[in-house]
Image (cartoon, rainbow, N blue to C red; front, top):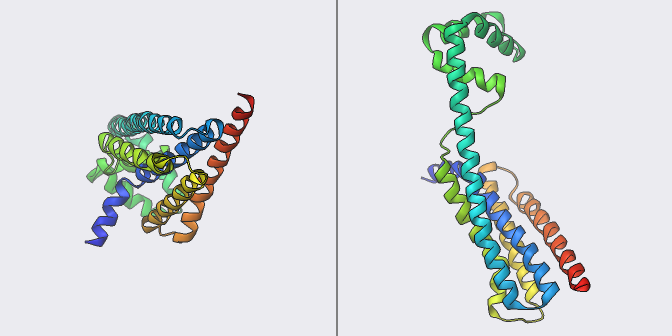
Length: 230
């Protein structure tokens, strides 16, 4: 059961981590910039919520189009590879042999594989051909609408944490609370990612935190500059 859950998680890990991290980091930067420039919690909330929904929609649309484009390119290249095998099997065979030789297969192994590919399984040949020549990976279980939905909710959920403290007033420590919450969630995202990447969970968490803190610091500087200028 646990392994099935991990396998399912891998299918949308990119969108989940990317969406959460981007939502946390981008909104933290906006929140700090607006707070330092205005000192007004209402303005921070308005800016943060607007950024959350606009960003979530933009990121999900981008994820949909990106995933759809990859899928379309992959399908088109499979068709082209099949046409090449049908029209010019000698050329396809020569190119595939050269690529297999680079991977250090010996002559007998290459001959056996080519015989199997061209006489028994041209579908496998087409898939291997585009993977080796064009470095295009199979679509796997990725679906544009699925990826877009995961990206939308991950970005929106991540964007909430930097602005939550501002719902409760304008205390002196509110900025520190926002930063602390964001860092804690970033660290949790990094640790969660390590369950499927098999990296050290602490290192994974620290890596994402450093990225977030860097973006937050830039946001703070921008707010400070605009606060002085305005």
